[in-house]
Length: 457
Image 1: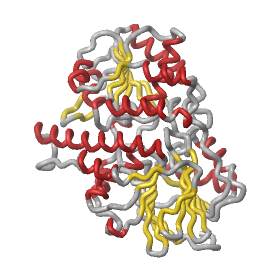
Image 2: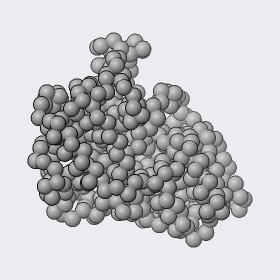
Image 3: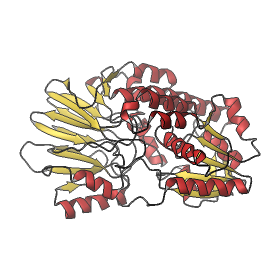
Image 4: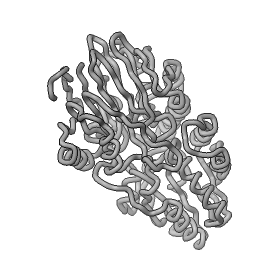
């Protein structure tokens, strides 16, 4: 068996790992690169091998940095199966269609306003490409072994993080290779803790927060302070948010704060049709999260859902205190970008920036203190109060990753630290080496490694 690291190596996005075994080719995750332009350009690189030679794809979860490249492969001829948990399949249907639609809209907007360097600007893929990709989805229940190609089986286990997220165990020729995917937090208010994995010959572990701990501060207390402070000055709290996971966690906390009367009775808007659809899945997949029926209903109804473009534009004219949650989480696209243009220049408002902001994104620039950000070819001043918020992360921090690793009954032959910025990945590598005594390394983009039975890597 051989593995090639086609993404999420030296960065947190573009998750793609190519397995070769007996002339079979399987891709674990199929994600988009996001953030810095030099990373995003990889989305248009030729794929590592002819797509007709690719036999199967397995997704750990639905976030676009793990699933968003799938329509590109399908447009280029891939027709094999795409395996994922049932909840991930439902989420991918929502995310990919929205992603294709959004890319078409952004290309059309760029062409209409003439700010693209390309003539014409072209979408990476279209909504129709995404529709074709969805026909290939094959749901796989958690904790069931499934043969995906001859002499290779997979088993998916709950990873926490978001609805449907899974670790992937691959078994071929008696060798076991485990992909952590994105690990959730053990005490997440919505999602169950990641299931323990007891053994693997080789392991790939994420390191998004491999060099830090999440703060102990209560997210509800921080949310209440920010919203109350902004409301007192008659401002609007704008929250860029991932539509899957983050938006629902925000709404859960806002529901609890309103129920406790810890924040004023101001309108809360969820301005993301995708996040609106995703929220409904929490009611459908109630056995896969911690929420009671009452809390699930409360979370799903605390916000006013904004679906139309006209209603979205009307929010920019809001002149009374409100909370607006809008995609995307790193302010790279979507409706939140238009809200930033309208709301960021006003010092009465607040930009609440929850979770990890990948380098090169607008979100990272804003959190770093940039006084302007470029939106649709123009510099937009950031005069609003900026509040980074690290208490809402759906990723395990360094200590929590180490806690999950200690669930292994014996060390893997080798562990690869992936899905992190260089500092985070190297910090986790050192901890694994020093505290656990495991053989461990940080692979680079496009590295290939033979996973030889019985031989230390």
